[in-house]
Amino acid sequence: MSQERVLDVRGLEPPEPLEKVLDAVATLQPGERVRMIHHREPCLLYPLLSKRGFNHLAEAKSEDHHEILIWRKGDAAAAPYGLQE
Amino acid sequence: MKLEAGLSFSQAPPILVPFRFFLSAPLFGLLAALLALWYGPSLMESRWQPSVLALTHLMTLGFLGMAMVGAMMQMLPVVAGSPVAHPVGVARAVHVLLLPGVVLLAGGFLLGAHWPMRIAMFLLGTGFTVFVVAVGLSLKRASSDNPTVVGMRYAVSALVVTVALGLTLASNYGWDWWLIERVRLTNLHLTWGLLGWVGLLVAGVSYQVVPMFQLTPSYPKLLTRWLTTALFVLLLLWSVVYWLPEGAQVQVILAVSLAAAVIFTVFAIVTLRLQLRRRRKQSDVTLLFWRFGMVCLLLALALGVAGQVIPVLDRVQGDNIALGFLFIAGFAVSVVNGMLYKIVPFLIWFHLQSLLMGVARVPNMKLIMPEPGMRRQMWLHFAAVPALALSALWPPLIYPAALLFGASMVLLEVNLLNAFRIYQQNAKLAPKGEPSST
Image (tube, rainbow over all chains, first blue to last red; front, side, top):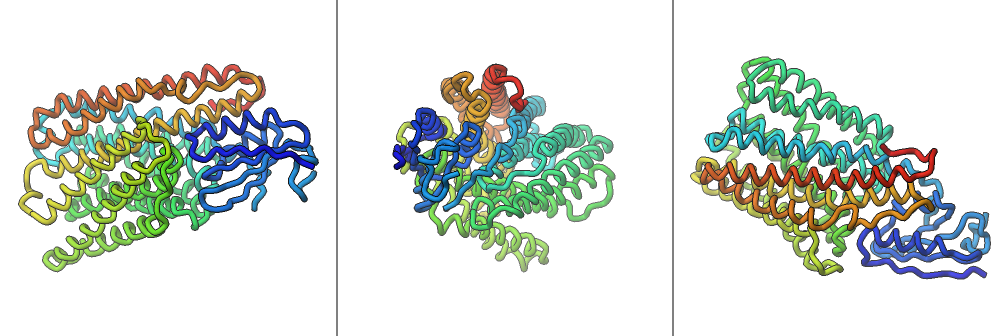
């Protein structure tokens, strides 16, 4: 069963949301993923994550509510259902 | 839901793509200030003088053009999800063509000589063609649901009209042919350039950057959906009516101009109100630059409308020059300057994050672009703009105004270069084999 850490970065000034999430994913344990909640879609985060060996799945709940799931590549236990590699 | 595992670093062009433009922009502002110091109060005699034309183009093509071309190449992938193809080559070509092009154009005006004008036409025409084709292809791919993309499409179309009219007018200087409609073509050229390219781009880009960097609520949907389209249609309408015989057109021109002024006023007031509702309450330099810019836009609109409604005012010596200073230096330069102070440190932070992964800690944004330096430059600019506008009424004021504007531009260049130096110093720590952005 995967563990989820919720990180709400709404209302933070750039690049704080990116700083916070990069710090958080660096300490992910096996089977653990981050659910980032942001007021906009952080397009520039994705290449930074990919380069560091993380996968992500973005979902827009509304125009100012985006949720991004982030997990380490190859960590099947942390990946959302259906996205295990 | 969407999975974007395929998103690569090509989404973010190398740092020199926007920076070669950003670092060049203040140098043109400085040239404009030096020119104003050299020509002094004589600038206020008429807006048709070669010195005023050179000054205007150093500010618009030089400062604004450089910053806006750079910002657009940077923003297209992030905002529109559609990067410019071959960004490094395109940026290099456009920069290498526009840079001497602007200098020769200003030189051509000042010297009244044919050859600099002819070469400038070739350089600027080619440079803008490369830019418009590259950016146009990227905008064509982008989604039309995004109001910023729509605003950018109109802005680029307005740029095409501006450049085409500009080249026609320049050919008049380059070959001395008899251009009977010079006054009307000039008014069309500057309206498409200032209200179209500058106004539409600022509006379209604001929808993204004001909420993103100033942490305000989003612009109202109704406004983002209609504002740039309405302005573009008004510009088209105005251009057509402008060719009707005099007498028939006066009332229509007045109505269309008033409608455009109302739309820009709505944009300025909505922006100011959104800024009052921002999440973070402390003021910062960018916020102050934008507020100052919006107030100058409102003043310029008031002056423009007053000139239309009370024709006597339009003939007051220097009235158009005050309006030009308020719109160009007060509105456009301020918002561009304010945005540079967010985009530049953010991009440096972003590129270092990518280069220094696991090697060294990336400096904080506040260290990359320290607040005191930005504030000093901001105050110089805030002093320069009213002085420039008032020098239209009292011409000797142009000397302190130009000194303040020049000092502000020097300090802006120093601030940008210091930040870029931090990037270069830190980029050296990157592991070998990392693609260097410089």
